[in-house]
Amino acid sequence: MDTKKITFLSAKFLLGLPLILFGTNKFGGFIDIAPPEDPLAQAFLGTMFTTYLYKFVAITEIAGGILLLTPRTAFLGCLILIPVVANVSIFHLAHDMPGNGIWLLPTLTLAVVISNFKDEFKTLLV
Image (cartoon, rainbow, N blue to C red; front, side, top):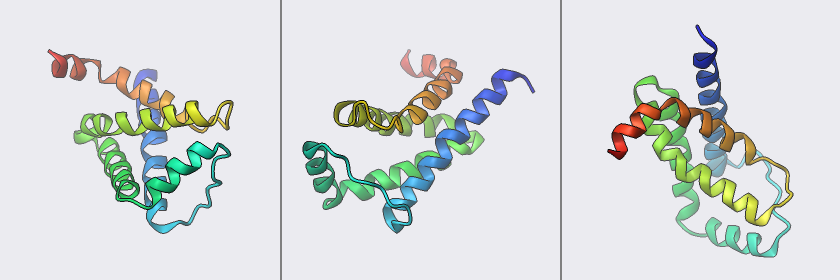
């Protein structure tokens, strides 16, 4: 197996497994997550927790992670996870700078996964 294939598989697992874990955590609450310090971020998350959006994001994370880890549906999982990871990154850049950098892992791994689906994206965009 070449280095590119190993990097791609590693990135898929480093993206898919945490999203499945944190998606299921939204239902079970088994990992304690500290609230952000920014009052605006607290208001946003407080609103999100009390509406349908929290469970919708959780289901999207779980479904996208499972699809990404399944070889036949990995591209679909990638497509589903792009807005989720973009939202995580933008939220942390806007409200958690300099922050804890937790948003770096999904952003970088998604970039590696997207780079391996160049041909699929070209087909999709033509």
